[in-house]
Length: 234
Length: 234
Image 1: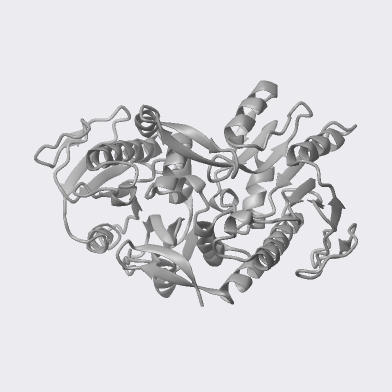
Image 2: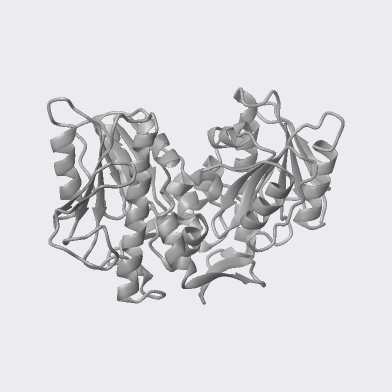
């Protein structure tokens, strides 16, 4: 199965500016991306798909082998599980990238399904992604917090993406117009790491690289009055 | 299966004070409770359990038949699916209530399992709860946002509750000391409606009564700069 992971390599995670500076946001976004790629690659170790062809569509050149360094793009990295990851640079809108990928894959001769997984799903695991790719439906959606769309599987070439604003509701309507639509109920896939309050989820439940990066800089803090838990700088 | 739903009928949902006044918080909390009870009752229509015995443990007397009215407690309501709901008044701590329920149920002669489901899981559905009660393990946990515990199934009488602070991590450790522990990956069950930002999830994905109450008072608002979606008063 082809899995597209769109990545903003230019100004990633701007809504984390209250707690991370620009260099930190850049490094943290790459950590999350690599955890997402590991989780997606792990799909090939399950019986949910025959093989997985992972493609990062990045707004700028990107070297996946290192944090914070960049190369001329088009890099390919052989991962422990042998799922190849390809990087393509494409600075068009997310909608244009996804629509083109749908046309190329679902609209092609064999009509293979396409999966799209956001690069900030730091809590993603192969098991959670298994449930996504195993769910039947012409369009299968994972809602994000705040009515976004965190991941989807498309099996009809008639679907068009619209990632602006209330995209989960918009995608549901658009999908219902062209086929069957299903949703996947997963905390791990519904938690995109966008805002400072989301960091605590990545700290506790995130992938290995994400947790390592966060635990070097933050610790859990409990507000005794409110019972609320957040992260505090070490 | 015995399902305990703890309910704060005294000062519910104080962290929603920035957007709901005290009377609204009271009414809204009851709407969510009734949606949770419907979802729990719906378990009896599945093959996950033979029957479901639902018990609200309320900090104060509570009449489930009406919104905002109270009676002398101990009320029983026959619901469409015929799952009886019992209300018990108990103003002790959540830990004491859950520990007693574990002792009475799991520690009793037949060692039946006990489920605990929080009253503010407005997104709960029978399907999501099915996944909870069908997951094997001496203790099965559903993490809440902010490292809380939103629901659990207990199958060992040695487990003790500790709902303060980082309860999900504390419960994992306590459970691992006395048996096997599993977690359920569900956006619907991990979303407790505690803070203003959570209301948008209840508005979009919540149960019927919750959505009806919210849509009468709020509408979706998209911040065009940030792409963030929230609720605005009508």
